[in-house]
Image (cartoon, rainbow, N blue to C red; front, side, top):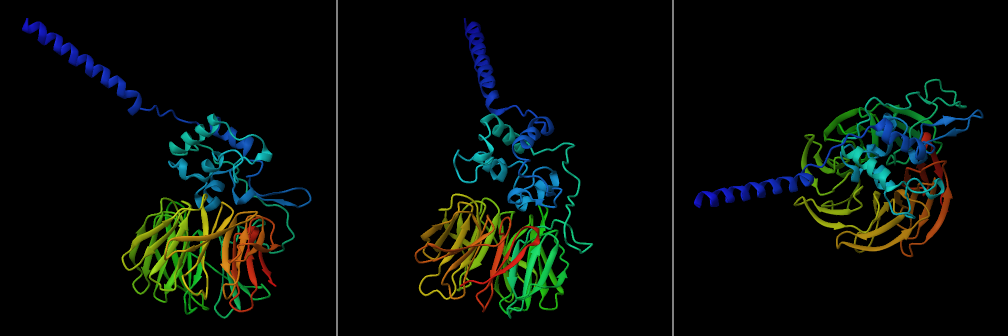
Length: 450
């Protein structure tokens, strides 16, 4: 009798184990079906994306057509170099701008393909792209359009490419006599106000994203790097242009630099970190972690103990540098944020303006964690600055226009179309009230504001 009971107990235990094992398997062992890029993903991009996002080319009349928004999808190289390497991030579909845009709700600003190009991608297609990115974004043997685009041009310089990369940052020298522009081909220094090219400087980084002069105007910091590999800040003497030091602790491109004082600065990177540097030794003294995605902009408040940052994770974050702690996280933006600017000569609480893909400029009082108000624009602002005295905000926008915003009423008080394509960057002259704007194909333009 006991033997029979033991046998029945053993059978019951075995059955239970069998049921549990096979019940768990479908949950814990999701099939990792390999996605073939060329047969499954590439046709989607060819049919729905390449018409707007292919390499620059020229028609028989010499008119140049550039990839929309500076995003090229018809080659691996173009994808890796578009929008700081965040278009497709291997293994991270939710962080990849391509996946974010194709999964926006129908009718949402920024959805891709745009409404005029037809219906949104089906759930089946977006899921396929998501799985391909999640499994490592393997292109296999595909490299895409490898022919270098050489459209006809009226330029006579034999060594200048027909299509130049965009100007990613602009900054005036302290005396206002020069403006420095950066792009993937290096640093260009122009005379002001003629914008005649004075000279160029070679930079170690392959891609350059941001420029900042030291408070005394004697040094220039250049932030950049090699995507997904290393981020660097190169310090040059000014006006000599001699490379003094290279700082390289970031694991991805540096997208923003901000001086704290003559001997220290902060850098932000696509690796999601912010580093505070001691320039006398060239070593990091603080590493701030808190952003869930790449950081795009930094600004110090006047006390130099408070740092404000923003980035692709849409948040504006406030840091106390005496402790290295994140003290506020402000999440009113609904799409990635590009830039920050501190209002000069402000009485009362400090005020910071932020610019985002959600087509807003938001005004913050970071010391109390309050969003004061916001202005909604026709197109996304990519770069913002304050006019001298803090009377108005000036924004460079995705349609090539510069817009002026009254910070008190948050009304758009002016709109000037300056460039063909995106206006990526701008800077306000230190004394004469004029503005310089940078955009695609190395366009640099001067505008006078009334």
